[in-house]
Every structure is written in C-alpha cells, then in structure tokens.
Amino acid sequence: MKKSIKFLFLIIICLGFMFGIANAQKFWVKFIDGDGDGEINFKLNATNSDTQTTYYTGVASIDDHNDYTQLLAIPPNTKKIKRDFTWFVTPGGSKVYDIYLTSDNSTFYWTSQGYAEVESNGKKIVIYWKNFPVTEIFKPKERDDIQITAVPIPSALWLLGSGVIALGLIRKKLLSC
Image (cartoon, rainbow, N blue to C red):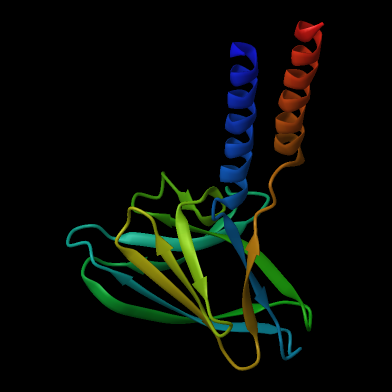
C-alpha cells in the first residue's frame, strides 16, 4: 500500500511540474508588416510608478539576448511616456522579439522567462511586469499588427516527465512480482 501511495505521489508531482511549466506565461512579441509596405510602425507607451528608479525596456532576438536594442528609458513617476518606432522588413515580413526590462543594464528580466503578464485585445498588447511598477503598451499603427507568441516548452521537458512516469511504472511492476 505504501508503495502505491509513493508512486501516486510521484506521478502527481511530475504532472504538476509539467502543468506548471506549460501554463507559465512566457511569451515573445511578433511585430507584423500588415500593409506590405516594408515597414513595421508602432507606438510604445510606458508608465513607471516607482519614485526613484529609472527603468529601461527594449527588445532582443529570441536566439541571442546579448544582441539587444534599448527602446525606451522610463524615468521615475512617469504617468505616460511614448515613442513611435519604425522597423524596416521585407514587404509583408515580421520580426519576433523577446521584450526585456532592466534598471541597471546588467540584470535583465525577459518576457520569455515569465517575468511579465500580457493582455491583448487584438489592437494592442499590454505588458505588466511582475514585481516591477512598470506597464508597457504596444500599439501598431496603420494596418500593421502585433501578436503574442507563446514560448514553446522544450521537448526535453516532456521527455523527462514521461520518462520519470514510465520508470515509476516499471519499478512498480518489478516490485509487485
């Protein structure tokens, strides 16, 4: 009886871990040239309710966080700071970026690592940074588009979880003989 309870407990922990990883809100942002003119035009609005700290936000390639571009400095007590951006792409193209937040340009907090929550209504995306007093709003201009792209869960994680469960089943089968 004790072995079956241990086994059941192991399965619950593995499934809970995998479910938690799967439901963590980790995302990238996809900027799309919707009108085919070779330009992605958008506006970034940000607020900072901290009274002392300036935060910096920007984008980086999803493959290389060392290659990042700062978009905006958000000074303390900023109710709304905004800036317009234009990125050039092949007509109809897109760019997928990881968004970051930093206060010291040495420690970065990324949307792909679950440091932010996102809300989208199809016309804009709003990024709420967890544990930080900063909110960002990305709004596409003209007929361009901005979408949220979920960060895929590594297949190794699913393989590990299913392997642990399979080993538990094999162990149980061997011990019951």
